Amino acid sequence: MFPENNAWTLQLPVLLPQMITFAPMNKIFQKRSKILVTCAKRISPYLRDEIQQLGYSIDEEWSTGVAITGTLRDCMRLNMNIRTGNQVMFLLETFKCTNADELYRHLYTMAWEDLIEVDGYLCVTSNVNNPSIDNTMFANVRVKDAIVDRIKEKKGARPNSGSDRNRTVIHLYWQEDEASVYIDTTGETLVKHNYRKLPGKAPMQEGLAAATIMASRWDRRSNFVNPMCGSGTLAIEAALLATNRVPGLLRNNYGFMHIKGYDEAVYEAEFRSIEEKVNDQVDFRIVATDNDPRVMEAARVNADIAGVAGMIEFKECDFLETDVPQDKGGVVMFNPEYGERLGEYEALELVYKSLGDFMKQKCKGYFGYILTASPNLAKKVGLKATRKLEFYNSKLDCRLLEYELYGGTRRTDFGPPAGDQH
Ligand SMILES: C[S@@+](CC[C@H](N)C(=O)[O-])C[C@H]1O[C@@H](n2cnc3c(N)ncnc32)[C@H](O)[C@@H]1O
Image: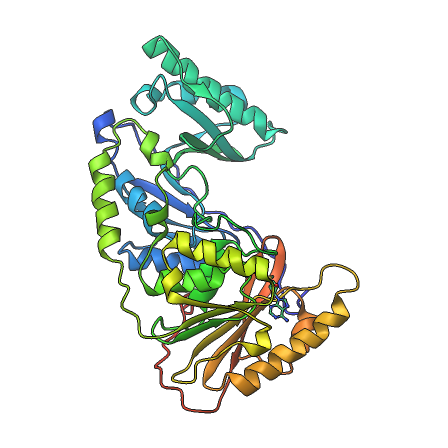
């Protein structure tokens, strides 16, 4: 563990009791309500910045998400535009509830027939902490039963249900005696950006890669160098950021599309708007290298799917041979292995030492970054980190270590990185 790491505590939003009665189905997309956007632990500062840049003000922020107020149309925009989120949930109702029978009875009063087609498909997810429930699957089943029983009563037939998240998803957030029901307007998580068809070794989640770049001092006008690129996630995310390509360009199914009253014209208008914002005019270089020919091939294929293959200079080589452009500064970012298997550690000590030498000698005028889960290996870099930013890579406690590599002339005006104001 990193010595300075504080035990992580789950901070959940404080939900004020509120009642959002269903609007007639053709109005549900205009109704304003609480919207929760969830993310992986420690990502919320970057998610918050993204949401603010879309013009929304933040009502609450906690370590795994943020809350705003808006409509289902806003949920559509958020789903298509954000890079660092997981799910976008639209609050339907919050109510008092002490056990599963009360839960069923309350949900049965809600006009689900206005939201879900009788021939639709429903998946229920939940986050439950109530003394009467020892198996969250049971709570999910009660939610599903209430919804399908209500629709059968009103319409004479009921939608199918199951665990696939590719159609209507309803989320239950039930803590102690208060339950909230949300439409999960996302469905399958947003954390995958849909270009990585071929994995490398230990690939980073796309949302995490985007967040680490946002956390860096990269200004999207200077060079971005990614030795040890693996499946190319960091280099591809950098190219996507620099050209204003948002994840919605590579995805065509969301939970909101399976809500009654969904207007495809609104989605198409937002799609055109994100397409129009793409700007391929860049005058810096993105360089990505790896010494494994198989992962290099995967990186090229993935970049092609992402639409940015032409922007990234890929080269199969040892990281020490990476061509670091000297015309102007930028960012050099590594996600090396951490040595989880026995016997790897000693070899990696030398690798991490070489990373330090490489940055010192070849990356003058750059900001260097290493994302690692190993504090001991990080010490071998032999450079003093100017910042240590906390992340999780999957379940591993990680740091993004920043090194200011003085020397040469830095010709870029690096502004403050994202997420810095908190
Ligand atoms: C943890 S993976 C990087 C994963 C990457 N961020 C992704 O999302 O796919 C580390 C990569 O470093 C590469 N690597 C290890 N030693 C190397 C070396 N000496 N020179 C170049 N690449 C190396 C491996 O082939 C592997 O792809």
